[in-house]
Image 1: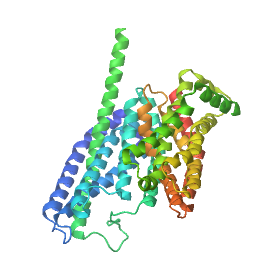
Image 2 (image 1 turned 30 degrees about the horizontal axis):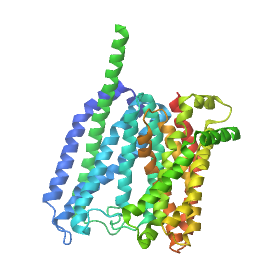
Image 3 (image 1 turned 120 degrees about the vertical axis):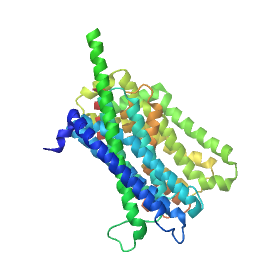
Image 4 (image 1 turned 90 degrees about the vertical axis):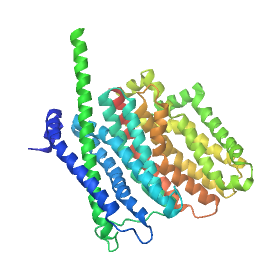
Length: 244
Length: 218
């Protein structure tokens, strides 16, 4: 039993089909539970009032936006090194989810920033880095869409993902150098004295778990769709061969 | 490799396009800025280094798709891939040829265009130096982007979408160095970071570009 067995599309389809409903139920429970807990069962902050509750969407989506890119990087590396098609398709399937998470984080951040900072947008390092991350997702998806041959597309997008990751990190620190920020620092660290209050932290952890499970569900579903699309193409090609 | 460089330079000169076009584009961008923002000298002076850096960057972008496209179409890229020199070397030489025909003229033209924007006297040296240090990185990154999109029919717009986010760190450090120089602050930190970035892109990106070309030629 090894992880590489799932590089076989057939094995992947069978296993992912079996676990998908469980993950879907868990994702729904965690996301909904975390949000209901967060929205209705936590007190308003003494300074921020009810707007503090945007945290329950903003933080998990921002966390996923970064981690989905990291997952795409790992999947691209696996494709480059071991040529497993499922891996390349998983990277392709993850990108639109990551793009959506980036948008959600930017949008909820703007909604929170308007009453709190008095502005929808500020050229703060974190905000700017997210905007750049958004552009990276766009470029990556556009390259997938532009190339016809599936293997060439997988190879080139993998190269772009590797190079893009380096430049995304570079941009993050370059932007830090360029402008000081308004955004608060990390407040969920395990090794710090001063963190967000437990009242908010527990539902937030649940929401983060929910968003992670949601991503797994969407990823499995979208990868399965990509595999099926591949199969349809192969069947059509075979049908054309037999007709001719 | 020197023969390849000479060939590329000769082609760029004779075809006319890239060489003068980027400079003309740079000039037009700089001339358009006062029309958009008004002719007040103080305002133009404030933004002069940023506009010049942005203009040079966009002018550089304009000629990127020519780095590999023509050779890909007429098949000489395949000949180069089977030539005894490594493909990484070909990518590096192509980037160098692009810099010599685009980045270098842009760098030399920038101080002249600085006159139009009332660039402060202290700024000329640092603007030229930051462009001289930064434009090789623009060419190296651009060569990588061009290698990625060389097989596409209408790759131009996609090339911009892919390359522009990669230009962010170079632009930040370059424009920051030029701005600090023009305002009379210490420029060492951004200038050193810019130089480091350029050295790293020159060393590493030809490998990524060569990998992309191999995939596209398969």
